[in-house]
Image 1 (cartoon, one colour):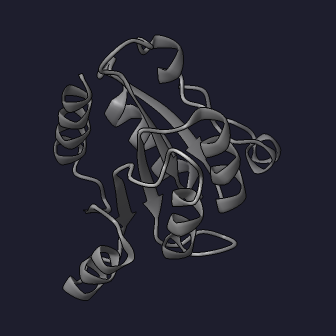
Image 2 (cartoon, rainbow, N blue to C red):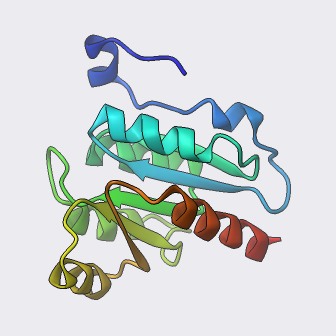
Amino acid sequence: MTLMSENDAAAITVQADLTARAPSGAGAIRVLYVEDNRLNALLFEEALRDHPLLMLDIAEDAEDAVQVAHNKRPSVLVIDAHLPSMTGYELLPLLRGIPGLERVPAYMCSADASPEDRAKATRAGFDGYWCKPIDIGEITTTLCRLARQKN
């Protein structure tokens, strides 16, 4: 795992090492994780490392997420609730407005864990809600199931 300097991290979208290792054929899915906390992003990357059907792109803010989504066309969206320039709730409709992403599964990933937070995410169009600290088993099981369904 390579850590970036503060200057590098602020300027670019991190693309995880997983992309190079994952197969591009049937069954592989591309996950876009929008997370401004570098440590949380690295933990998520580690959680997916042993799953070759999961390709991961990480964006640190909404603007990077939109750019990555246009260029990489993710199969799954994972969005933090609290981002620097807008909330995850505001970002989801922007990403769903990109052709081809209207119906991709989207998961809120947040430390906000009340039943009201979960209900708000459902009303906003999220397919699921993952609480931080992340449950690696739950996340990898869900993502691997989505990869198998694609096949």
